[in-house]
Amino acid sequence: MTSSMQGWQLMQPGAHNLELVRRPIPEPGPGEVLVRVAAVALNYRDQLIVDAAYEPGAFAPLAPCSDFAGEVVRLGAGATRFTAGARVLGSFTCDWVDGPPPGTGQALGGVGGPGVLAEYLALPERWLVAAPASLDDVQAATLPCTALTAWNALFEQGRLRPGQAVLLQGTGGVALFALQLARAAGARVVITSSTESKLARARALGATHGVLRDDEGNWVRQVQALTGGVDHVLELAAGDLTHSVAVLKPGGRLSLIGVFEGFEARLPLVPVFQKEITVQGIYIGSRSALERLVAAVDALGIQPVIDTRYPLHDFPAALQHLRRGAFGKIVIKMPSRG
Image: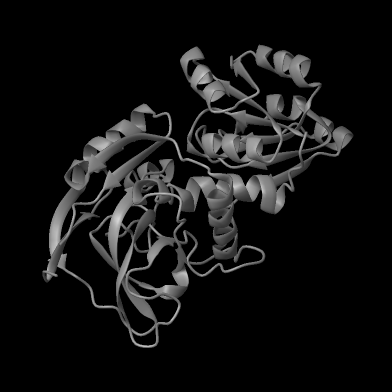
């Protein structure tokens, strides 16, 4: 192993300030492991972090991105959870092992939390989980944020049952994982999009119905006609939640996940009261939930949808692709090491 590695860093907000730098490979401390990173998956949050839009007013020099798959190559003193050669994933919310979310704490790839877009990482072993045996590194890297969010909404919190109807707003990463997971659990899945081509691809992945979304809300009547109302909506945009509430059955569940339309939402309270709707915020998921997701992926044969793979040096191009939109995940494939 050489003594140095490449990694991206950001000293000031804005993609134009990204730098690919060479720095020493870190040494794992007590309770840590050194991981050779194989692949890093991008999330919408990464764009917000680079633009300083996720935590306005707070910025520090950082390394971007939170989701990775890699191989343990060295153990620090007292590290026992993994052996050298083990394939691992990072847990997004670093010290959330199980139970309710901590409400505060360190997360990978943010202001104050270590980013993962580098060839090697030295991390506490408690922040890691074993990677799924059924997926390669590029596929596995997509699980810790988007797939876990979908899993948490549907199963950890939503307790999805066979035969229920789920509405997914859009065809982003969370929606495509939710589509596959919900169908594997025997649910009916309605997915909305503003383009027919994306709906066709969603149907090919198993969506029961695809509905073109419009600003006037005509799609609500279509969904109600197809399903009689849905049991669970995964709301991936925020903004005005009137239509999402309207399409829910009495006793239904609204999972708030995305922020594509901003960090505030408008919720019509009268129908929420009348239908006794459960409104649930979803914050990724715990390490234990990620372990349960990995087991489900291996058991069910879930295959992440990969849009494009980029080499490490093309991260700015990958970020631009993320801004334009993708069908499936954008992944950085790390250079091979001897």
